[in-house]
Length: 145
Image 1 (cartoon, rainbow, N blue to C red):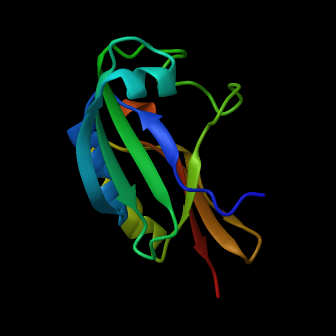
Image 2 (image 1 turned 30 degrees about the horizontal axis):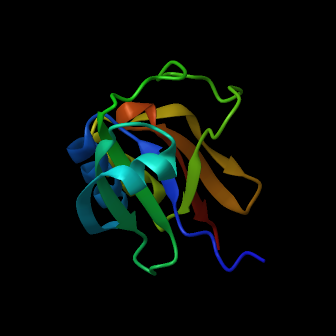
């Protein structure tokens, strides 16, 4: 039986930019480390792994995103960075926010762009998708009173 979802891994090329993006979103950097060695190789199924890892978490401590930059072997791109929403695989992570327009404006200072438009869904939510560094797509949801 599952106890909880611990984290989501995103492989990035520019670790500093990815950390800055998620910190601007409102997450906090929990820690950073470098991993390598036989146990890491066996765990991920690659030889000669050396990677930097940063863990960011939501302020309530319940959600985490692991950001990993592989030095060896080099990361490969499985799809274009500008992949559309209907591309197979994980497309985005959604975060609940207080002021969606403020969050979008702050993320734009880190190069983020809207994917589509900021829309209102019925009388319940204001929603948008934002593409950040490395082509990462996050969704933002502001619940309306």
